[in-house]
Image (tube, rainbow, N blue to C red; front, top):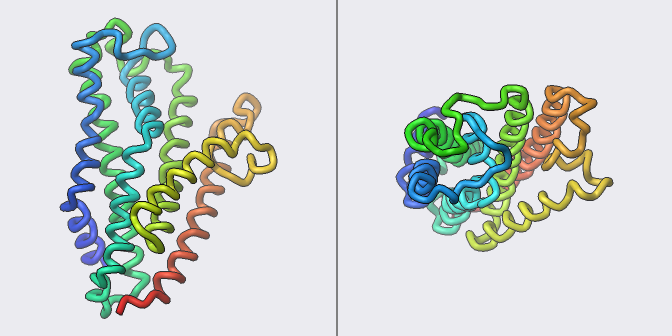
Length: 252
């Protein structure tokens, strides 16, 4: 099983779409250099920011532009639909289907989290190398320590939401073409942004859970724990559906 996972991860990393995703992890470096060249490019609420606020803001940006998630869905489509259509997966015929599925899941999520870690590292690195000289920068690790829990909560919810978007992309990638998988994931992303506005769905849909519970009367840990549980339920249901489909799928 470990060899299969390593093989899938290495195979995925060699793909052009995965390499492009890694290049997007360098985007904070580009922004930092651009800010030096053009001072008014960077605009954010508040008078000054530290490295922590800067990294948190860039995490919000990468979630809003949605491109990293679309590339991850593209990677998922190649790992599933294209290999199934081209009967490449047939060469795994002596390996249990559930092990193949787990390896592909791990490879897809690993690629995204490698990108995310690289993105965060670059955010901190280029804050101190370049952005610290900006008029809004304090040059310190954090400018507003009293808001650290709120910022951690926001970033964590973004990452949790990303895992669900990717899972929806995997579900579609197993069953349909790349274009439809990307289009469907985009629709789900738009749906997720709107759904917290409807009271009937607020407690059963995890996206935007920070707005569901009043964090002034509920501790962050409580809100975050409830959010994780709801995400886990969605992931479990999606995975079980995909496992049943994958095991019963005919590759030849």
